[in-house]
Image (cartoon, rainbow, N blue to C red; front, side):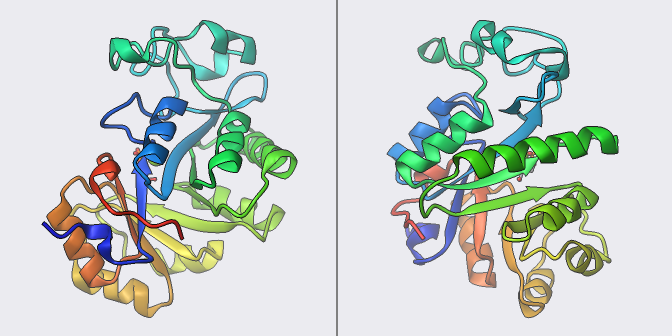
Length: 252
Ligand code: G3P
Ligand code: MG
């Protein structure tokens, strides 16, 4: 079975880490992606009430921890008491919700390339604070040659990131169905990457994106056959929960 990533230079992105074999968005999930030579990880960024940027998909704790309630009602010392692994399997008891700083240190040590997806609501004061925290953590801790790509569904937020940190590569996320005015959003943000949802995505749409000069990363693809089809259409990368099955992978 020819694997999708045998095409050198293609991006395979472990969606929330190696999230089919470890609890999503934990260091265990990122370490397992590294163990399986997955070249990129995707991680979701949000903020605690004290301004600490953490890696967590949901605004609430129920689904991926042994606690409940809102992330924004917690502070950094609460992370010591929240188990983010037991819900997945007993082997992962003791996993924590990582801070962004902890994740950056992991990428510094391993050379893992990072796509940080910024989660956000519509409150601009909140999103401005989140952007401040992310840029602060990156400026203080990012070292080495690993690549950083920041993405979000909130394109207004991305435009603000561009204004404050123009050197960072950006990707506009789009839900399915892809809106007809995707190009306007891309130009408004000044993004280099477009991240469309896989559902309903056509070869013609991918061609329009690559013809416009954009790199295309598709989420979330858990079929090797579909991944191969997308690579053949010219996409740069795919997000997958089974990134560990895309062998061999290449650091790029
Ligand atoms: O960044 C791609 C993908 O992660 C976006 O959707 O809900 O899995 O964060 P979600
Ligand atoms: Mg995500």
